[in-house]
Length: 331
Image (cartoon, rainbow, N blue to C red; front, side):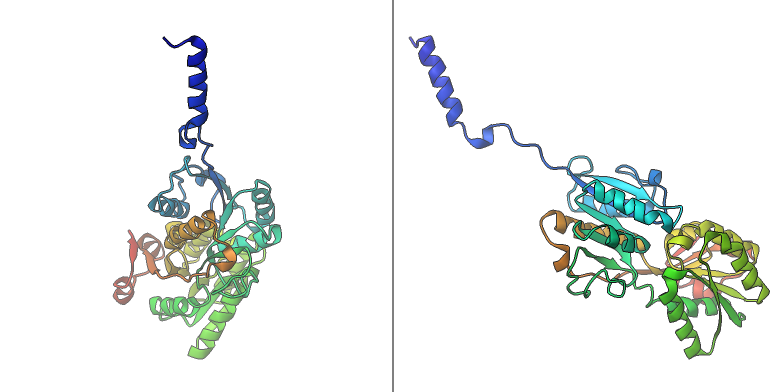
């Protein structure tokens, strides 16, 4: 018969000898991913199924890599729909939260550069990371920024060509731009000069100048509008689309959300695909890679989008040659 003292001693030794795997495991780290979006309210960005399609594409990319929301990561989203004045405060707020990585849209990236040199930043479509001082080179960024560019400058001439094909009778095209889009304007100006086309520069520095900008375009009898939207104008896409319709100006944009918000036609990088691919960068960083060593990638998918409802509202018939090339048509 085993005595009580012997039994207790045996159990104690067995517990001490138990393998480490049988003991309580430390809780798994749940990563916090900061999100800074320029074209949405924070309420549209919350949770595992956000209303904002671009962030939804990013979360889909993480799911494809095996990440489960709430188990492996959560998001700390911040939306700056009101415009660029909010970028510095929101960037500083995310840095104070000590998130593991931040994913951000192009116009908000300079504010993040000012806010931190240590938190990894994944670009969800930087316009020109090298020129903006966010990366030393695309092949070796060298700092805390990496991700994807959107090649906005490279597509400026293509957008202008499509707009002229859409409205061949337009002898003067207005170009709506803001200070952060200056390089876009210069690219369009160079392309127009080379082709012998005339442009009217309409720069907007404040949201209150939009009405006057369209009066200027109408007064000059422009036949079409090319929109280069940074943070200020992108946040007011719906208003711009309304003013374009009111003035019966066929307007060309860059990204899908602008067409979904009522814009007529858009050509540019597939921004949802860019954010889906941004998940790969986040995965590598969470596994220990340094942004400095991850080459910046360029977009591989471009799309032509047409909003037939917007065309109908201004009495415009889309040429069959343009319609046939559309990747997506909104009825």
